[in-house]
Length: 384
Image 1: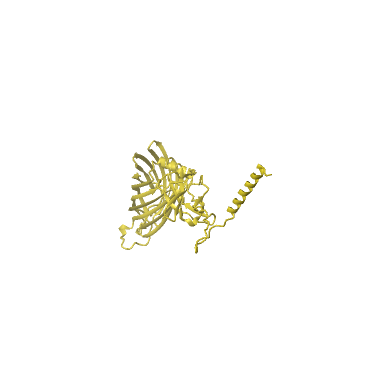
Image 2 (image 1 turned 30 degrees about the vertical axis):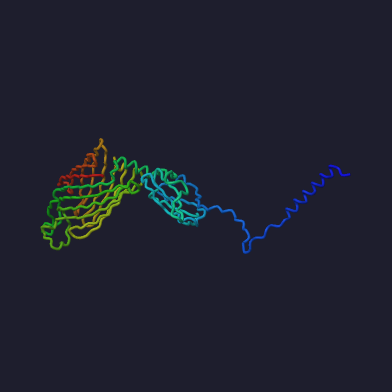
């Protein structure tokens, strides 16, 4: 006897048999000559060049600044650039990053651009297509580097402010000097004769003030003409006996002033000259104690072949605002004299404003106790 459950089991077995037969049926054959299907790989990500860089936070003034970086995928970059600007010049300048021994790539900002208070920079990549992309910071928002001001910069700025930013000075000087009558050796029977001992001096000069270790350098050009008790010597060709006591000097004198301390400066001078007897060399120097542009004591000397030497001391005292007075003592045998004389002088310098200045000097000098004479002169200057 067949029950209902037996028929249900038989029907279920038949359905499974049909299903297995359908799964086992083979796929239709591929068309003749067709390539088998190939699975396409996923597209690889594009290699984008990048810059790896440790930012510079601060640096020393007046020293080259080296910026180092590493470039990822450099084969996709035409060149890498450091672009920078300073506080004084807002225009960006470019320096190419190159292979370096102490870093993968490096670029250097020159020392003259590393100035107080800051500079700022960014790194850029120029792709093979010519497109520029920012690698670190950007021109719109560059990275700032602090540049602390060194002590020499502080001194320079303070002196520059005192001088009103006027670093160049032109000056013109004129002076008349008389020693009265002096005794000179003579070829006559008396062996000596009285000579009028005097000269005129005219000088022009230019000074520039770096206000650093070299505080100033200048050049002076001048002429001297006069008469003096010159010693007996071989006659100058073409010179008559009456002209034997005529003296003259055309000279040029470059001078450099060095700072040893805020209150101690030294000057070195080289002189080249043409006198009545030919070409001559000379030298000079001075020690300045005190404020170089205020009250100070100056001790100095100057010597030129044939023409003579002088040793002097000068004390500049700022009396009131814009007025400086200076007593001067000088011992000299200029021009071309055998004996030394003493000069006692006084000078008053006035700041006229606008860069203009004037100085007046006068005094008395003598080579002999029984004879002497006056001197007077002045200087006009313009600073800018």
